[in-house]
Length: 115
Length: 110
Image 1 (cartoon, chains in turn purple, red):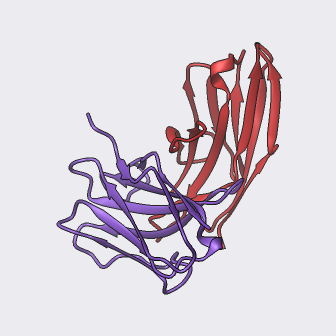
Image 2 (cartoon, chains in turn red, green; image 1 turned 120 degrees about the vertical axis):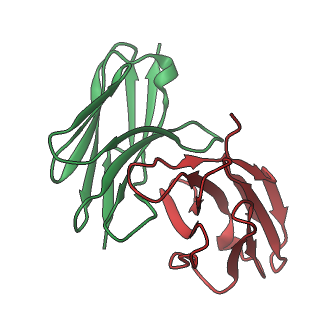
Image 3 (cartoon, one colour; image 1 turned 135 degrees about the vertical axis):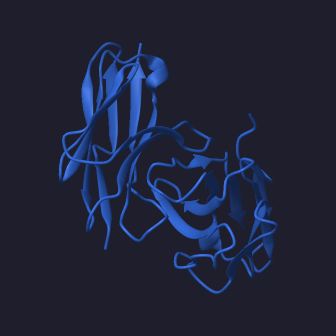
């Protein structure tokens, strides 16, 4: 079946511009996660959604970052007034639930470059 | 604070030369320890979940083991197609997201 998809695959933007990154999770997966991977670093948790519950935003690095999930499916991560340190690969993952018994399936990521 | 440390950062092996990757973790309680494989330009691909000390899981040339403080990913007779970055992650009680290590870049030369 279809996996997690993300768009765009690459995004180059100028410092100060806003960007939107999109994630389409696997159908039926109630949990959706956003992570950020900087060059040579491990994945850093940003935000997660589970069903209709309030999202866990504890990993968002600043108030320039926000995310929403519409209809329990597609999610959009928005970065306002981008800075060079925002350059990274943004990865989305989904899972059937949040228990450790449910593995997270990752999309291919969006590579963001802020010039 | 949950911490995951992987070693070595990079490992170069000859085809058929077995070795192990290490993942040391500090977490208050462990709901699960995860191993992922990541190829360049792609998202991580799930390999294993381990839940308690003493547990082992195998998949082809890979075997993952778990103790109370660390996990090992053993690679037996590796092939060039095993070349990738291997990521370790933990999930702590009350947390839904995973805490990842920075990975081990494995290169297997023919």
